[in-house]
Length: 425
Image (cartoon, rainbow, N blue to C red; front, side, top):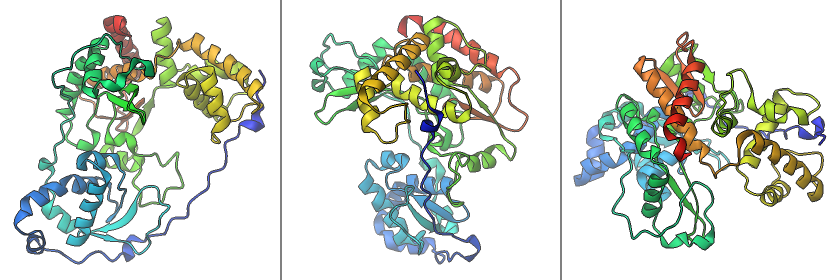
């Protein structure tokens, strides 16, 4: 199969021109006293203040020079307030109290919410970090009557009639199929007990996804945190300065000059290990191993294309489903042809190469195994009292504190995990 380099170029991004805000010229809301707030909230002052804590916490973490971008669809806020309408009410309440003020440059196409100026002094008067404490551990109610259905991380066929079973039943069944979930939830609780900032608290709970008819589409789990959802400015240089990016948080919490250790090709690397028992050297690039023979040359742009295609094919289901999505989705990287017959041939060849290298994917269960291995890595780093921040397969350290044996740590954790849970993979 021949690939044409010119056909693989990514489309140019359309940059959005954001309003320029000069922090030295911003007009902040007038000072608001506690008496004013008491007066506006009335008798339910305490409960109202407690109800605002998740939003206040979000603002404290994300404001930059007295400016904050708030989206009503931000997952931490939607989860805390049980829905987007309640997020809007909380935002409106802070505006009414004079703690937030909309800037004069609001616009509709801003993907990260509206821009507000913040009255920091007043916010600090009513912000109580200790009162904002979310429990991330999962608890199950008593299961319903069991039916002999094999729940797994792959897509569950509609004929299984899983619509009749509650999420609680499905998740309880998952604990039987994958007992490591409970074991690693316990490890996560121990790690979180030493984390002072909720922003970096690890969440590790399975999630049931259903289609519009109520049938279970899949069950997924991946260790994540609020920090994982923050974009990198290196990858998004078009971001305006008042959007706090990953690098801004790392500068604040790890200091200037922090260092990154990135696991090269984490998903295919771990999939290959679970499939063959071979742990690749940290300098080996799994994407290059799989795809290099299909290209005239190999460089960073080519690798990005390969990573994109790997994810789409590995998790894409059948050849027929992958081809259909490739034809219908405009953002798919191009192969030599967009004709169905040639595309089917190309994707079949690539899928065979991926399956030989990584094994056939069981839905998205690879994210369970990846998460468990990296939780063990975090546990080892905690024993060494090394401060680390994590975004999936990226580990961030203070300058000069990256362990020299970081690659060996990850390898040992992977071997230990496979040895312990080989019957549940």
